[in-house]
Amino acid sequence: MRFPHPLIEGRLILRYKRFLADILLPDGSVVTAHCANPGAMLGLKEPGSRVLLSRADNPKRKLAYNWELVEVAAGGGSLQWVGINTSSPNRLVAEALRDGKLAPFVGYDRIRPEVKYGRNSRIDFLLERDGAAPCYLEVKNCHLMREPGFAEFPDCIAARSAKHLYELVDMVESGARAALVYVIQMEADRFDVARDIDPAYDRAFRHALAKGVESYAYVCRMSPEGVVIERPVEILTPPSCHAAEA
Image 1 (cartoon, rainbow, N blue to C red):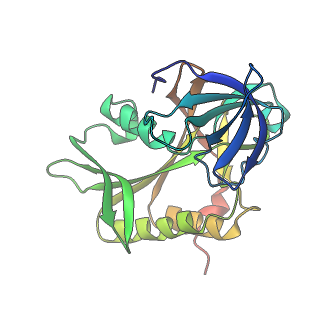
Image 2 (image 1 turned 30 degrees about the horizontal axis):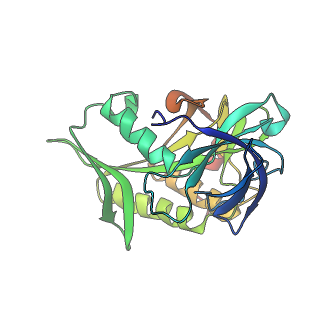
């Protein structure tokens, strides 16, 4: 996923009301950018942080800028670019599926986004091919890092995401395939659920694994020019966590 135009550098003044961020530009002007991220953004919203913005495609939109990247020492490690735009992972996965770069999902010839399923939900991608069960693929954005190299999800209570896990279980029990893909928009070498932040999501995740829902985590190569899914990393859920709780 290449950015269509050069990104604009600035310094974060304040992220507020979840979806707004005031940014100081090099010429001394201040703009309000759209922050496409409903999460807590732990460690990513320190005032003064170097950020990169894209211009909105729609000239009539109220906010002319989108906040795309922030440079932080994630988890106390080296400075790196971290993607904060939660709409990016679906585009990244769509590209990777199209190009056959996600090995567990190669061979499907029909890829449909945003398909209704379950209890008034939509699956990010429904993968289909003749003679095989459909695959329900849910995509999650990951940008939480509290120790170097160790990515985690979620960064806040994620009740809606937990609900989706139970619905993926329903799909497996109906005879379909179901999978989670965590897109890590930063450099990392391992991943796990942040069970201390959201124990309910952890329970849902363990239940889903025990019932046959697959899980994968991929890190992205981040740069001001673009973002691309690069390689899989290990998910460190302990073996004892794979058993569903009573």
